[in-house]
Amino acid sequence: MAAPSLHVICGYAGGDAGDKFSPARQQLFRDPQWSAEPGSGVATTTAAPDKNALVPVFRITPTIDVYVSIGPAPNPAASPRYLLLAVDGQRDIYVKPGDKLAWIAA
Image (cartoon, rainbow, N blue to C red):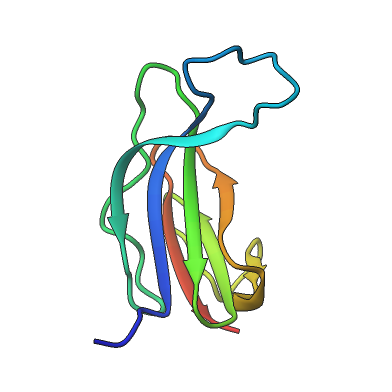
């Protein structure tokens, strides 16, 4: 099976159970809620949840260069949009509850 052109997983930003103020610690992606591999130009069917005032994050892994749009009705053919290069690997983007993601090839 071929790898998808884009994979997105929705979760939250947050540390682990340790000392969150330690300079040796970095914020982690945690508590995955859903994942998807939407087709080009198609918005995810699931939106970022609103849970306990946590900040939702989309972790996006493109295998090709893409334009990504995020919002309640995302349109990757118009501004604002993100250019994500496959060579850069995964990207974490903070989103708002209710946001969805759509993409097109760059």
